[in-house]
Image (cartoon, rainbow, N blue to C red; front, side):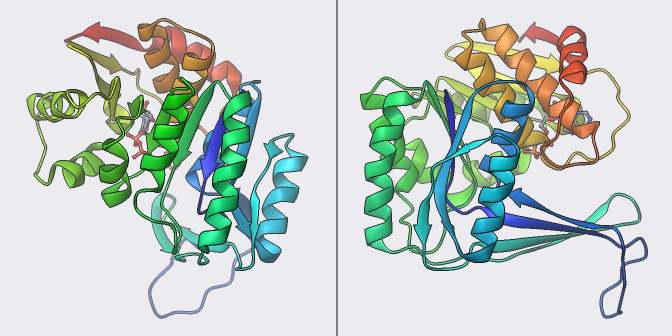
Length: 308
Ligand code: ADP
């Protein structure tokens, strides 16, 4: 089983307001609420691909109930720690077809007792998981070293850990050398604290990270595919032109594909292809963290991996 960890999940509320402007009043019939947070997007894609997935993290209040109901409806296993605070809302306003304005609540505060309960649950979950994926930000109250702790515990049990986060949570997590990280270009720049433009600069930065024991540094580059460093090998994955509907959640979908490839013991190139294929298949859908398996399969045949 693959387990995705979402410590700060959200109800993602999406409104379509074509002519949205700051300071005006708008009405819309086009809106939806979905179980969100990057780890839940990853889980949804794994499930749509037909693989077994468990979701865990902290959850609370009416929003928490909504999320658990949605996950159960979608056949996604869930085993969260209940907290007293209310799980957050994240609001996205889609205007002029593609422009997106986002408002992200910071989320509830988690207590040290709740963290301890989660760590106990995590030890049990580790027994039954083959691959762990942790995505997104840390809620208030959770120390920056949380991902470090989770990675070390997974390593002790010989389980590969994929970390997809940014800023100081990523920096701290890297001290435990996760198996795989998937920064996009701006996350890489933030991590390295320098502008990164050219392919050479991407490769140089990824090599620096990989030298600290991260097996796979997967730098996702939107429509330009991805550049990957694995030990002293480099790969570039190129994608065919597609009709983009909504690239939001493509990074999460890519992480899902990489986790599935790892879980199913794919060879390196096939694992990378599956990651990129899932990312691109998501960009072909309106929904966030949505893929069609048929699109993933056709992308898998059409993406090209070359050694660099
Ligand atoms: P993130 O969502 O984390 O910023 P990216 O935007 O780099 O991640 O997207 C991850 C992957 O999704 C890319 O490597 C690519 O395979 C796919 N993807 C994203 N945007 C597009 C796009 N506009 N066209 C085709 N594929 C895309």
